[in-house]
Length: 141
Image 1 (cartoon, one colour):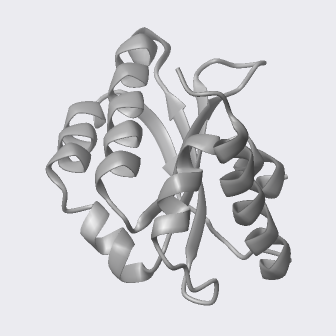
Image 2 (image 1 turned 135 degrees about the vertical axis):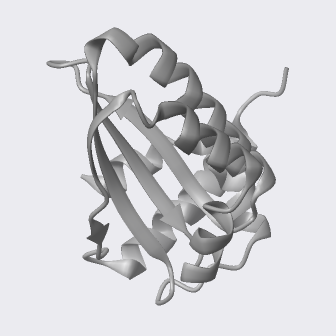
């Protein structure tokens, strides 16, 4: 399931191609967040901003892909892929992450950050290669 989500993130492909990734040191997480309903729209603005800035500005942030449950809009999941533990530690010290974290503390009802292990790192390499190929085939505006 995680691999299918990664396929849909074509904007990350160029960053992946520019950043060598060691699949043995990569950190993969699936953040599980529940937001208080009265803060949902504000939370989504914070989340979209931090995810976009992180992917744009941080070479070690391979993927931050936020998703919202179709059944319960307060359930947010973020597929997070970092090049290494060092990249993750650097990420959580950035100005844009700290703004998100401090700004949303009162909005989040629950948060779980389980670390995931890719079942097949070799397939993950193929996915990233496919993303690079697919993004280069997209028409330019």
